[in-house]
Every structure is written in C-alpha cells, then in structure tokens.
Image 1 (cartoon, rainbow, N blue to C red):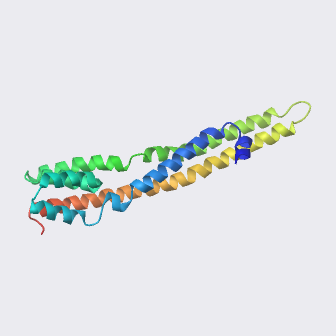
Image 2 (image 1 turned 135 degrees about the horizontal axis):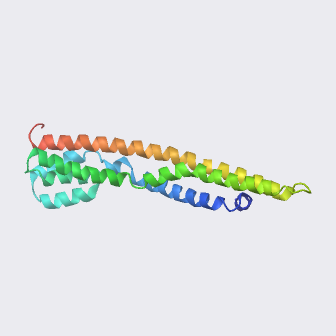
Image 3 (image 1 turned 90 degrees about the horizontal axis):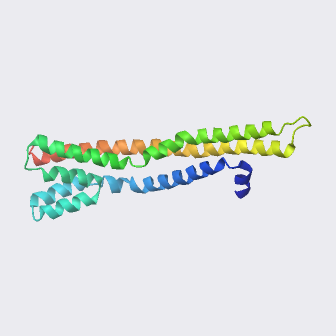
Length: 201
C-alpha cells in the first residue's frame, strides 16, 4: 500500500483524506439510521396508552423526546394535545422538519465526496500527464520519469473511482432510507392526531 501511495505521487493525499472521511461517515450513518433506533416498532401505541393513563405525563414526554426521532415527533404532538387539531399538527410538523434535518446530517458531505472524488482523480491524471510530457527531451525520453508519470495518472484515476462508487451507492441508499423514515413518521403522526382527537380508536 505504501508503495502504491509513493507511485501515485502527492495528488493521492487528498483522495486518501476523502476516503477516510467517506468510510467514517458511512459507518456513522449505518449506526445512526437503524430502523430500531429511528422508528421503533409499537412506540405510538405504547406512548398513547401511557399518556391516556396519565400517571406522570411530563416525565413520559421527556423520556419520549429522548427516546428516538419518532419519539420527538410524537412528544411534540402530545405536548399540544389539549390545543386544536391544527395547532397539534403544526407542532408535529415543526418537530418533523427538525428531525428530518437531523436524519440527513452528513449526507451532503458524503454526496460531495462521491461527486468530487473522480474530479480529484482526474486532477491526478493531469499531473501525471504533465510529468509524462516533462520526461520528453531533445535527447529522448527519460524512462523513469515517464513510468512515474504513468503511475500518477493511472493510480489517481483508479483511486478516485474506488472512492466515488461506494460513496455514491451509500449516499443514495441513505437518502432513500431517510425518505422512507420521514414518510413513516408522518403516517404515525397522523394516527396520533386521529387517536387523540377521537377519530380513531
């Protein structure tokens, strides 16, 4: 690996940094965007049941808010349960927007890495081509410089694609996952409003 880095020249260093950031973000999002952590099964029914029993609702709402992103949305609705249906919906919507923003955290960075990695690899290719042309002289080509230029060009192009392809795959996967979670939370929030305002049992 060290030999490859040496052969690829200095343009490989920004790509190595991008690869480390990309791997870190992918691991972080894989952990953070687990279904059991974002939209736990049965949370709505449990929250509504405990709230209607009404033993210590303030404590329940605080725990619900800390529990999960879905819990934050439900908690915002339950805090305004005595207000009108419209106010309850507005509070849920505000909380939902904040939760959606949080779920999308780091995805812009991952998408940027997926977009710019091939360009950084192309930059390395250009540097390699300059080295190749620099190896030409009136007395003939310098084989060592020519080989080094070819190494820089090919390694950087390849490494840029190696970073970009998985980053793009995971970026699209996470975007779809977040979109699905947001739709699911919207459906649960609608059910909550219907439960609390007597439209659904």
